[in-house]
Amino acid sequence: MEIIIQPTTEAAAGIAARIIARLLRDKPDAVLGLATGSTPLPLYQALVAMNLDWSKVTTFNLDEYIGLPREHPQSYHSFMWENLFRQVNIAPENVHIPDGNAPDIPAFCASYENQIRAAGGIDLQVLGIGTDGHIGFNEPTSSLASRTRIKTLTPQTRKDNARFFGSEDSVPHHVITMGIGTIMEARLNLLLAFGPSKANAVAEAVEGPVTSINPASVLQMHPVVKVCLDEPAAGQLQRADYFRWVYENKPAWQAF
Ligand code: GLP
View (cartoon, rainbow, N blue to C red):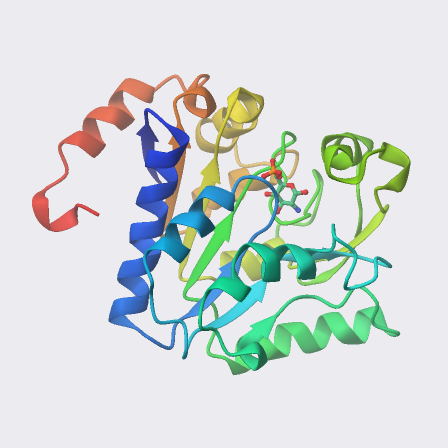
């Protein structure tokens, strides 16, 4: 894991944007895995400002609420079109977001996995992290080998996401999410975390044991993970000084 700690959220998101920009320049038909929530917003803003060519890019989103109409302002469909896709030249047929209204959810989940495989797998997966360490909507105790499937949100996650819905009662209980096994097959995982509310989950994920109680900790088993943090999100890392030194002393050819 490469831990990149930056003084501001914008600087951390800017590095993540440069990592993605480099991929899209090297591989214009890259397959990106994308995330929602408040965390990736500064990343998407930075990417839009870079005016990259998205015409050959394919995307797969991590997750979606079950039962919310696609056009609901809090659906992840709405989120992605509003905050990224409408502002870049992506081909709509190359955008994949789980269908939370699919009549047969297990069949949809299996076909989502097949579509990822048919696209050649995910080159780079963007991840946020929940305050409980969830990635996608893989809540604590999710199987570390799980594939795309239905999950039930924990009370904590519904509470965390109530800010988007106005009330906790309006937050759906069920979601479709890529599994941890699916995420682990991405060639590069790019995890972003900002703010003090993520500090504990980040410290457990990076420095704690690998455990399904903190699903993000499984990334310790992945060969290429970059973690972009602002200072508050890095606030509970015991080795923060080491991570800062490593980043500041990278050989020039490794710099972003
Ligand atoms: C959400 C999403 C995750 C996201 C996490 C953190 O519920 N399903 O993909 O990473 O929880 O959200 P936020 O970035 O808003 O803190």
